Image (cartoon, rainbow, N blue to C red; front, side, top):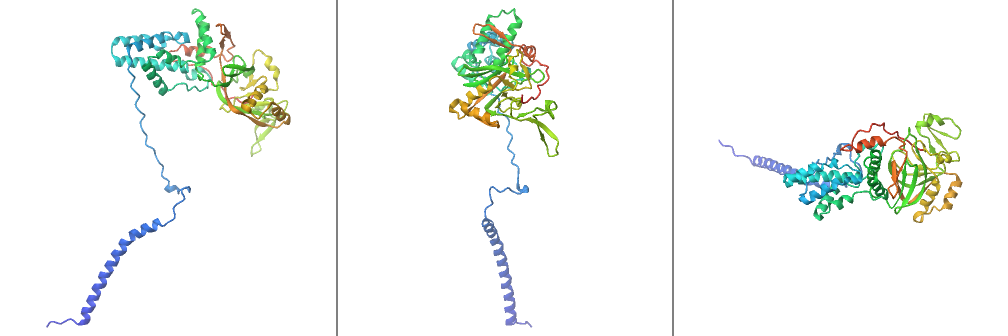
Length: 447
């Protein structure tokens, strides 16, 4: 007997089926709705402060891709007459104190005779690069110059190639190479002196050649207005528009504390300066009257200072010219030392005669507010004050052991630090890098 379902049974099963279907549809809807809802919620959050630092865990270092350096440009193609012109210039570089053999003119001739335009161009370009570098920057390089720290950026690989390309295009190789030489009148005078000196006088010839090369170590353009201090000559000179405007005697570093050769920008002076005693001589002044001890938190003396006054070693002023050697021009309380013929007496800095006059002139340049009267009033106040130049003035501290007069007469200065023999050895070396055995200059300061 087949039992017929009751009405309640049909209703119960149908109700359960509908409920299951409803729950499935709701779950599906909730799942699909959750994605845009989460996105909407995330977008509704306030934007993060772009300046606020991220948590350490969120900071991801950005590593830039390391690209290989571009390959060097192939040498330009030279024509045979251009190679011949380069060879002729090389054979004449003795007029500038350089040795033609360092640039192998015979090898250049052999490349021309070979008949291979590529090999000839490579040979010519190699010699152009070496010669142009020596004309612009000097033949002696690196430590062989001995304590020389003047930066010269007259030429680099990019400018060297541009100059060559232009010279080949214009057929102006000699003119291009001449454009790299120093323009200072002293360089021309030394060239004249070299041409008048017998080749048999080797010592004099080498001395002139050496100082020609030292001029090439300097920037070609020293500036419209600059101060140059020549240590062996014991003079400081202000030059403007190629004319000496001010020149007085100077005292340089002693043999034990040599003055390094450097360039720096003088931005002003400090009137009534304190003297920060170098640690190398701190024991000499420790506890003496007129010196002030600077102590650390532990109460121990760290260094000594000397306040402004008539006994101050820096005198009435010092120049502000930042450099890593702490070398500067300054006055002195021992002005009688300027009358000595040998003036290698300081701890490295340059004591300068009548430096107050120099400073007053520079402070008044370009309508500066520091008049002579204002300078004197500040000195009378006996308090340290910095007075700035309207425009900074470059300062070059150099080492020339010989100069030339316009007629070619040579003026020799005492090679106070005994450097010439060793630097000449580098000059005579093919690569300009002969070892110059000398102890590195000590870091000097303040006197």
